Image 1 (spheres, rainbow, N blue to C red):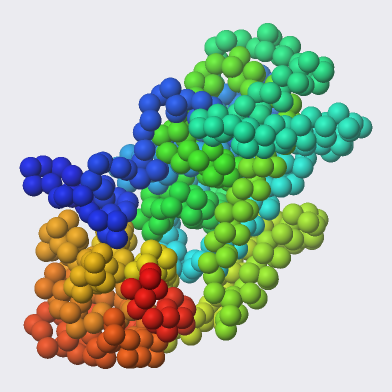
Image 2 (image 1 turned 180 degrees about the horizontal axis):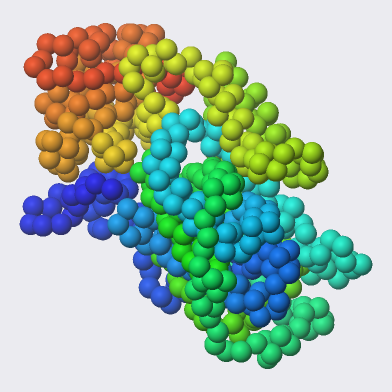
Amino acid sequence: MSDIPDPTEGADALEPLPSHVVLPWPAKQAGGAVDAIDEYQGLARLLPFGLQHVLVMYAGTVAVPLILGSALKWNGAQVIALISADLFTSGLATLLQTLGWWKFGARLPLIQGCSFICVAPMILIGSQYGIPTMYGAVICCGLFTMLVGPLYSRMLRFFPPVVIGSVITVIGLSLLPVAGGWLGGGDSGAADFGSFAHLGLGFLTIALIVAIQRFGRGIIANLSVLLGLIAGTAVAALTGQTSFAQVGETPWLGMARPLMFGWPRFALLPALVMCVAMVVVMTETTGNCLAIGEIAGRKIGPATLTAAFRADGLSTMLGGLMNSFPYNAYSQNTGLLSLSKMKSRYTVAAGGGLLVVLGFLPKLAAVIASIPRPVLGGASIVMFGMTAMAGIEELTRVRYHGTNNAVVVAVSVSLGVLPIATPQLFAHAPDAARLFLNSGIFLAAASAVLLNLFFFQDGDAPGMKLEGVTEQDLMFLRRAIELAQEARADGRHPFGSLVVNGQGETVVEARNNAVRPKGDPTQHAETLACSAAAKLLPENELAKCTLYTSTEPCAMCAGAIYWTGIGRVVFALSEKGLLTYTGGHEENPTLDLPCREVFARGQKRIVVAGPLLEDEAGKVHEGFWSAGTLEEKEG
């Protein structure tokens, strides 16, 4: 992350900016407001929310060592040691991912847990090659993830909104069978699976969470899942549906020692199998990071993904030394961020600290393990549904008219749901292929990316190649169009602009304020954005910036861009296109002079890309200029 100066610091601090100029993350506005992800509110608030995250992911992360231990026929003491090591390593991995260290960690609210994707290959390797070779393969795939992560993160440009929305939706849907299994009692082979007692307890938990969301206020509403879990467990205890007997039988202190099964051994084929599995894990990590970004309002770039992959890799290598597993971000907790409205990474870091403690205190872990599966299933129905809702919300921003985006969504979401709806569909596929085919998230991501490339979206692809425009450029350009819509809704002319630095971080956003008496004719969105950016960044940083604008800069704005020293401009609607909407309107006598001609007369080289997304940008102007002047509208 680059260090954008804080305009509120020092003797020469800037005066507060007007409402039509905004400094989003990572810059602070006057008054010191910070990004929701980086907000720290003290342990008194962080610990309850951190505990909520632990309760949500606990059953999933404990299930992995139980499955592996059972398949490899380990004794009870070995399985308990495996669980302790798993919790301890999950906590360290979460702290690394949330707080970060050097170039490791996305610094996002991502809780880390054992990867279910790697369970099958670990069982296969452990059965055929032995436990030391299995852990040697885990260490190798962790190193592989660290080395390949920077290359894999560059694929982010293949994840436009239509792909992101499809993948996030499938992440939520793919978790629902897990929630359904817990709702029925946890063991589908049991005689009482799906009994009225189990279902009643699960639906009661859902009702409690919904009621707390509806009638609770402040922190009470935000802790609805935690309170629902506690209340549901209390009801289960009163009705004899849970027992805390194992808590008394569990020792207070305990921790597995590293390399409990001996020094790791390394073999080529097992290592390759685990590396293939980690490719799927990286795809899921990409989807989870993008989902977190959408929920928390932060744009995720290649640098963030690279740091996330490095943290996954380092945590996995540590897992190999600690008799544990490969690690990745848990999708289960994504919906909790949206539901609790607490998006701080420090909240999840508090959960990571609790996991470390649980690794040393098996008695406390036994208390959490006593939460009945139907109660956990009821809470998960709400949270996993919120994850799917985040994907649906993203898909509402996709333009379907005149494109093949509907086909991309239909095919990719349907393919992503197949392994969920028909688990045995790929039973006859080779073992290596099943690693990919049984992952609905991988199928959705792969099909959405390939279909998006096949259909060559938005009609701008030729221009994109010639002008170096990426999907990230289109994302920022759509934000400029959103700002234009906001300006229109605020009673201003519909123009918006933003400046993005060389690291892909938004420095400043601005909306048009060019009509008296609220503003003056020089306060175009571009001039406002340039003025604010010039006060925040030095000249060498401005040269690396891109100004995105909903409409081609006029001659005045082009001059402002030139003298500010911004090195690149990407615009949507051209001046000639704008003229078809404004006509001879007295408030905007459009100056049909291409900005490229203005820049060509100067001595600085400014790269220009556009027009792009003209249909989308034009919709903001439809009906606006034909309705009279703003004074007439307000009158």
